[in-house]
Length: 237
Length: 237
DNA sequence: CCGCAAGTTTGCTGAAGGACAAAGTGGTCG
DNA sequence: CGACCACTTTGTCCTTCAGCAAACTTGCGG
Image (tube, rainbow over all chains, first blue to last red; front, side, top):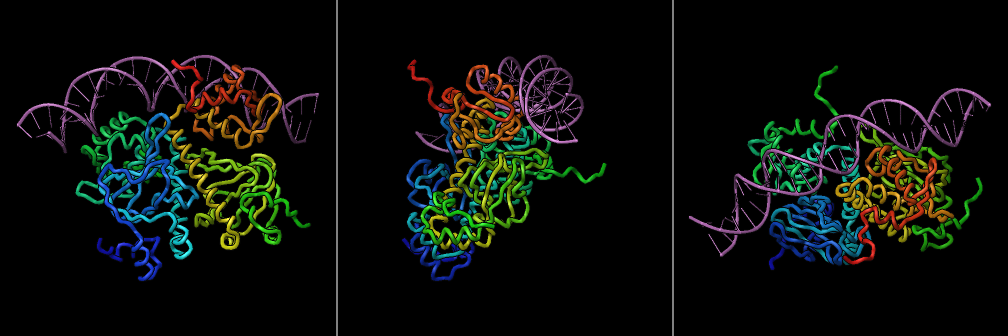
């Protein structure tokens, strides 16, 4: 296996403050791995043997209920750490990670976690910021689920994916990884039928365009109105 | 102000591994404060100046939506740290804390956070376990909200309060702090009307007893059946 | 190039539970 | 001790959305 290029990590928050030599050291202990779409990276309940850093692609983190339903807990985008059970003193993964699109990730054995935390101050800081951000996102979702109607939640979910992974295309902004109606229903606590109806309606209204597994938001502004976002037009009463 | 007694902290997880002298040192920097029921301890969005440790009583951590509705994010019981924005690199409180019953808490200025983390290993470990536990609880609530019906969610909420604060009384197990129907609705994403109807029905069935602001669960087992808990009776088909 | 599987669309129906309304019940503070 | 206030109970209506069913589309593998 040839050596990994140092530039892979140079720009990323967890490692942004480090010197060349340190990055080399970290990389030399990393195991890079490619995952095809749909492949599982780790599974809920299994021993947390490694923690991961996503370099390219998108990861879905999923929980399965006792009833067998799936709930999408969050999406990971490039540059983010994931599977960081050790940060929470857990020795087992609390959820399953699946590649939402073809992905490339590095991973390290958990025993290095403590070492990284101690040795590289930026790493600790960034990890806890990540945790804080995630806690905040979860709180937001709880609030949404508790107070908003299905239409608003689905709109918000689309906007979240757009802001996390949106890339400009002719027609508008496209979500950069494959998403099915079912996926969206698993993010919003509804059924794929309802999601399908909503998307159809929005397509008719020119707010989105969608093909089989790809969604382009053509009118983000209108979608924001549909989500609970405070801020009517700009006309005073 | 007279000195605080060292036994206050001796048993508590964040400080369990420390020597006498260290505990003394920590206590000497703490500000103890009593809060009447309903009093606010800190408010969402304000500068996070201090972090807190609850010694006695119960605290409700609440978020307010743009629509003005309240969502109860979690309850804190004695021995737990709260308002630990610094752990997440936040400089502002992400939610409001209110005393659910008369409470006593210690607090320290945030600048001591880093010091405690570095000096007292048990403190760091315990903080991150707390975070992990909280993340897990939030995930559970998201899953519940996304997949379970109102009745199950309310049952689960009662059980959660019971297991967090339940104390034995003649009739069963009582939730140790005042709770209104509205409070329960704010924990479960429903209306106080629906909660009232459910409690009435359960009271009729002999599962709970409730007075104005206090609830006694007389048949926890049956309540567990009502929540989504896997485990029917024990009769095979 | 055909057939199948996975994903999507759409219609219909019914039940859950939110919204509105209004009256009851303690508890507390003057 | 009386009046108000906060909390609760209960009834009725009506919307939203899950559940079921069935046809349709698209992409892929053989």
